[in-house]
Amino acid sequence: MDLALLRTFVTVHRAGSFTRAAALLGLSQPAVTGQIRTLERQLGRPLFLRQARGVTPTTIGDELAHRAAPHLDALIEIAETGLAEESGVRTLHLAGPPEFTAQRALPALTPLIAQGLSLRTSFFANAEENLEGLAAGHHDLAITTARPRGGLLTATPLCDEEHVLVASPRWAARLGHSVLREGHVVLEQLPVVEVHESLPLVSRYWTAVFDTRPAATAAVIAPDLRAVLECAAAGAGLAVLPRYLCQNALERGEVVALLDPPVPPLRTYFLAVRTGTLTLPRVARAHEWLLRAAVDW
Image (cartoon, rainbow, N blue to C red; front, side, top):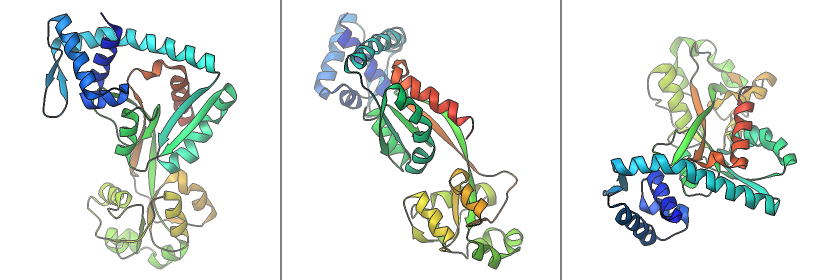
């Protein structure tokens, strides 16, 4: 059986789509379709059910993928390792949200540079865009706040991020104890600083703490949490921020936590890879290094 046909088959099985598999393999969609038909003729059985959106593997297709994928991954690992040793360069393409990647992931991976790893980083505030780039083969490893679905990508929980409702000391002094008495009714009278017009962080906080959606509108939109922190500290309004990002500002008194809920809102980060690529040394090493560092996050 032709290994090229098997590789195409496994890629389609994981991608769930001829179109996405073609992008990953660097082939045209008709070429991928033709290779799958050739393999089906050789086996005498259909491997996929064609649907309006993508394909679904048949029972035979699932069984073949289960048996063939580990061996193909091992062969790719051998080939990739050989190429890396010949070139002397091992480059990891990392993608993730700008603030978390800049302040946590990149410093954690820096020691690997001394071991010969090169890093190339892409920033995506949108989790779906991040995962789409990973699925298309543009990145080797992605840090994301959304768990991917399907078999193409594999995700491992990395860490949880606590969200804190903050404002400048001036706003906190003006509110006094009314925040605790009136809750979201008082808070919604304040201007809001956010990363997007939809108020994603404030909405998540309101839902978790007050069991309601916020009625507030944004006074400042800045698509970078570091800018949101600076605006909140300058007195532009309240903001919801991850604790790791605002902890130093809290300790210096530049911002104040307005509430201390019994169960603070959390958001989970995941490490995502294309299924099978953890056999590649550069990906496995970075993956392991980040998981180890995240214990202290």
